[in-house]
Image (cartoon, rainbow, N blue to C red; front, top):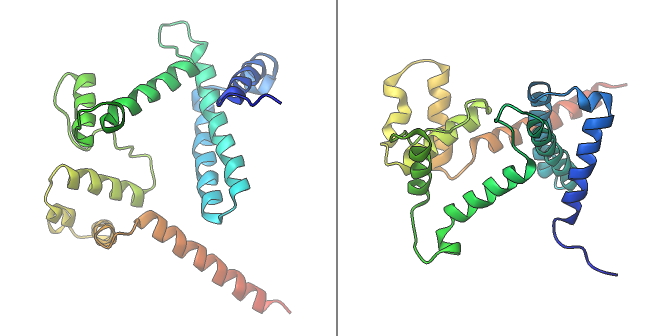
Length: 212
């Protein structure tokens, strides 16, 4: 039996997605906007599967995430206003970015990761940008705070700025708590998720005890 080349089933998925877009009424009417909630939902389900330690569940959920990427690319490929792109454009773009950001693997010249990203941002905008450019503010707040702090730290921003100049309020306290977690080598988002799971287990145990 001939072993398939890596990626062969991805071509099969491209063909399936294209046919569904043409022949399935539900798939045919979807847009980037209507698909947006599914992209977020499937990503969270993949994270939950990862935390469960079930490799089969993670594999399945990663497939659902991949479907969202394929779906968005298929929708984009149908545009005729010059803004369209295909799944090959998406794959080619990330492959080129990975090569560019890993000169220690693909080149002899070693460069700083953040310097490479800064050069990419400057090439796009035509002007020097901020170290915080590109941080997605749509992500959960704890993860957002941690990513902002990581970016700022690598750019040489003083850690004291995480105190928000003495700003009062619960938000400022939470932001400082994120800084404390990072200083301890912990990911605040994952730590809070672990605490939430522990709380869930305790509540369910309590509910079980209350049943006659």
